[in-house]
View: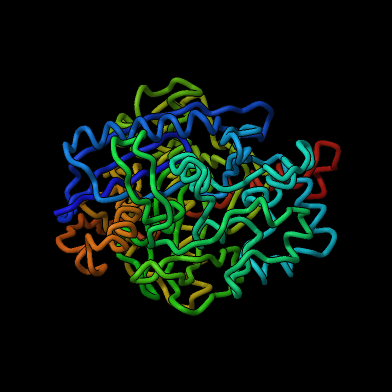
Length: 495
């Protein structure tokens, strides 16, 4: 039976999997790439390096599989923007990453100008530097506009390069994260393009998430291959988890953490800091979802490793967390690039509270893991309030979900079971499924998901303990918010 090459281009690395018809991984490749922080709050990537490592990971996976895949599915870090010359296919600036906060002042200016309500109604999103529009505006303001420019999220960039410039496209899920896409019309919104002074001709054409939309040149993987699936990473994970109908939800623990609940054909409106976004239905068709976004999750562990040198690898964290009975009173709010849902405070920064002379590295490591669970718990609570129904089981995926200690703690603080599939790389799996359904490898989502197994983590924490820990987490988040919302010149005695 034919297989699919899934290219999962993430925030810190590119993963490639060759997925067989029965769901087995026939081949795997992975490459990390460089993170650039040129100024405080700025985060950049090299688009050429992203393309190179993605192709390298794909070649490694195809070589390991030992067979030619039937086609390619692509999933990507969302909101990150690349600007390139469509004649030369060369980037004209570094990619501005979704975590970047350089346009915070511009968002505040638009908010003060009374634009937020209209933008929220049209796009389902909030005015925040997280999204793509102000990034594009910032680049165009500094580089100027000329007819040969093209812009897009990472999916658009990869497809343009892989197709030798013959396709400049994106799908509905990625388009819905730009602040330029109208959820009702499912097209680029002319009034928003005018607001952000973005010429429509530089934007990609919007295509379905599951259809043959381009051909990958034979140079890259040895033969011409159809590109038949595209989805932003969180929507791909939602599809890969089988959450294709209203009421189904998943949480992905990657660089950030992202909780999505499928809402079907009806757009949900949030009163609790969540976003409305486009998801995929059973055939990959556009549908709706509610989303909560935590900007820093697994990246906090990466910081402990690379920034502080407290650990040599993420695999150490479970044993270290288990080596102490608790965090010793330490709470860690890793708001390195601001706080997302439900707070939406771009000015927040990382905050560690409760440090004493008895604090050891194990306490900090445990606090970092706990922060992922507590941030996700905040999302579940907000989603339950918006949906008026509680989530009874949380389905999880992403790299950090392989940490048994973290998943048990997540179940404990939520007070509901956590289900982890046998394959946690559901982002790549979802991209493969979308491409494979377009190419006839699978005829339905049921066939695609057949044979999945789950490990279930049942909660066993006392309600009183959970309530105490929750209060401490809320105190720490409040400290981060107070720091963000009051300048050093203000009289803090008034707070």
